[in-house]
Amino acid sequence: MRIAELPAPEVARRIAAGHAVLLPMGSTETHGPALPMGDYLLAEAIALRIAQAAGDVLVLPTLAFGGADFFRGVPGGVALSPATLTAVVTDMLVALHEGGVERILILNGHGGNIPSIEEAQRRLRHGQGVVAPVLHLWKSAGGWQKEFGGSMEALGHGGDPIASVALHLRPDLCTPAAMKPRAALPPFLGQPVSGFGTIRAAGVDFGVPIEAEEVAAGGVASADPSGAKAEHGARIVARFVEAATTMLAAMKGAAA
Image (cartoon, rainbow, N blue to C red; front, top):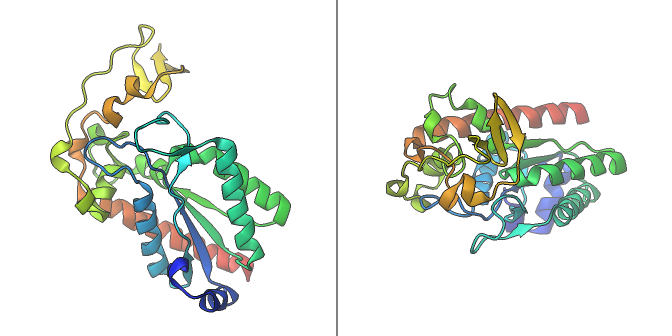
């Protein structure tokens, strides 16, 4: 299923037969002391499960470096400027189209990638008339926390949904004993911090230039990531696979 592991004639044969291509994306940044820096490994593992379930799908090498956001400058991390990432993703999508791929699905595992992906999608549609949908993994899964019985205290950077998915897919890279409750965040401008780059006044969020360590000391914004569970991660991954295979089938029908 991995394009990188197949000879070119076999890849060409499968693309000519209508196989879709998945482009997994993520980042290399801090997720705290308990989780690996490479969240792109999770996007890759999910892509392979989707490809196995769908049957007629190829998986590109994962784009391991994400768009710069709050965690730029982390030791060992690599972040790309929005302009650079937009150009890279656009070139990748155009190259796939030029190579005959009719169905392209992006799996995005990093919030900082979203603006660049959206711009690349527009360029591809306006320039080549091709629509390449994207599944924003963690943005989607965060909304399933209560539905799937996950701990609401575990939700947030350095915690769920990434923590539970990592415990499910790559437990060998996780250190659950290092998942500790986060200290209470001090107020900013005298108001409570409500998220990355936001504080809340009178029930309304205001955007402010908060630094990462003011929101997620040590890479952890989750109140208590120890509530992450592999079983919860398994439910999230199953939903990803179901949704992506449904989308791939719909794209196939539209292309027919």
